[in-house]
Image 1 (tube, rainbow, N blue to C red):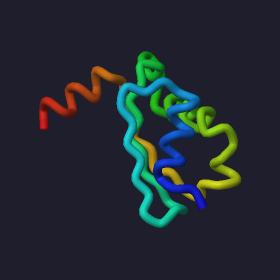
Image 2: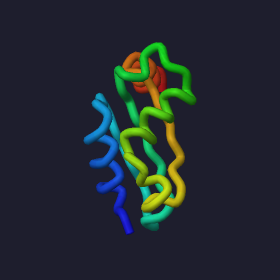
Image 3: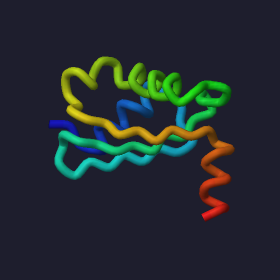
Image 4: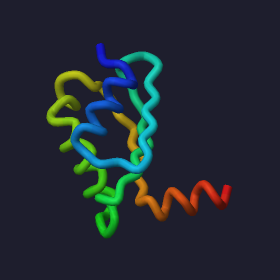
Length: 83
């Protein structure tokens, strides 16, 4: 059963991230905040596809559920300064 740290490491290995938080207390369901310059100019569906690609098939084999929040670095800066 993967840990939140495992999921974080898998994403980080396949996608350059400016900020990455992964939470998953039960080893089956995870939540991730992924901030990457690779998301600039890419719609949300495309951003999520980039994260799934970074996970290299682990969604089918090792991760039951992953709730994603993806942001560009600019969106992340605005969210942290505005509250």
